[in-house]
Amino acid sequence: MTHPIRRLLRRVLAPVSRTRAFRRIGPKAMPVAERIATRLTGGRLVVSGILVPSLVLHTTGAKSGHPRASELMFTPDGDGGAIVAGTSFARSAHPGWTANLAAHPDAEAVVRGLRYPVHATRIPEAERDAAWARIEAQWPGYRQYERDAGRTVRLFRLTTDAVPSPFRERR
Image (tube, rainbow, N blue to C red):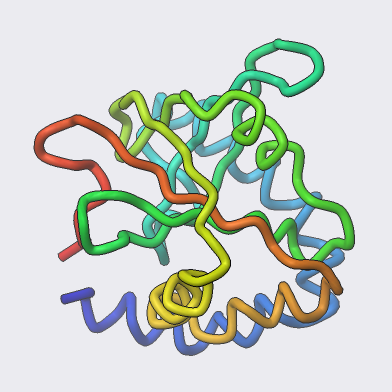
């Protein structure tokens, strides 16, 4: 069960995250806030993690082969894995990390300051509605990003052999 204050903040802030103003400011402000939090906490805090489970995904560039890092919200899948959605603040283009995972599905995720090996698989069409239902139970209205972007958002399931799984439900 999620903490009552966190649930209240989600209900209040979820509609704000869907506004045009947030979509304009978020892509610029969130990375700056994440960098500051990373420096101040040694990578133990992801700003979005205050409200929702979050991770830093370390991928290999699809074209460049260079290491890349992206701060992402994740949703526990109920089986020890995580669902991540390539919404990119409802932009019309897919975020680069989704192409990176498609090209190089073995990656690493930093969750609560600890690094874990992960393997990514695209969530098949037949499972998309169920995945979105889980995501929206955590962050109401999040699928609106897909509708507003005018594209099918790429959804991935991250799995790990780590025991216990870092993707377990937050209490």
